[in-house]
Length: 172
Image 1 (cartoon, helix red, strand yellow):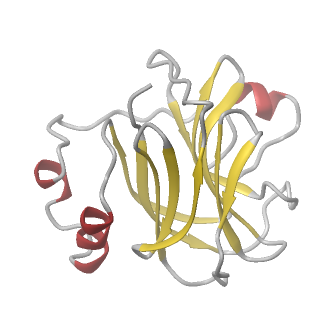
Image 2: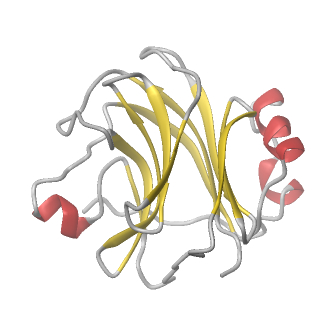
């Protein structure tokens, strides 16, 4: 499976309804009811997460990120290595032979779990602010992520390969 990256600015404001090891979702892409990509933050220890391939593989940030401040999170996958960046600094990486499932017919979810999980009581609702979400169909380099962070994401679209006109988001 080719790469699929997510990038966004977030400000966690504290625990959400599921205050556990998987924390609260910032952005999630599900495939057939199983999370295949999720960026999150958990209040139990103030760490950021990159969960992929169901819930079997995950990267937990090395550093902690206290509530009340803005941070830039990016999860990347180049076909063999998953990486989690916070404020353009590599927080962890994992080589995985599992690959990455992706179904373009299932939409991304911002700020909560995908519908099937919400219907089962696992809301994972984000408590805070999510801003400037970007999804890429190619792996961002650390230099590109650094550019997003240092220029406050001015001109991201064309410079990093996104050429579409945007997306319409519907709250479910």
